[in-house]
Length: 105
Image (cartoon, rainbow, N blue to C red; front, side):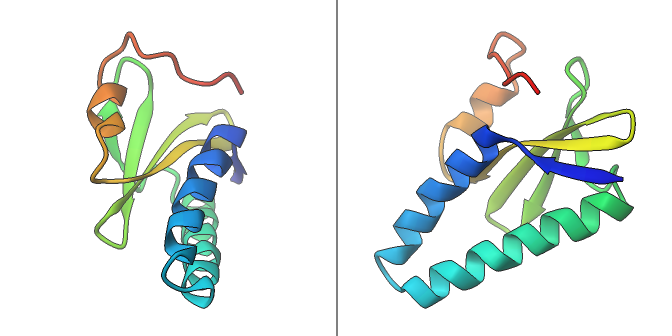
């Protein structure tokens, strides 16, 4: 199955990357490489690996490294990664609310 990282997910990863760069660019580079590999390798083979997070919207959540939430949806033969967020921020709760708009893909 094809995995598509949306611009919204890219933007959220960029914020995490910049934060990690404050400590170590090498660590930030490794993190970015590893989370991309984890996401694409796993979801391309096991698209339903994550737990259903919002059934009304077809939203799944997969957790990476015990702290980062990968939100995605499945459409036909494609997995769209919508958000990748640090689990400590409040957007995690907001995504559970069906009134929050999801990006178009």
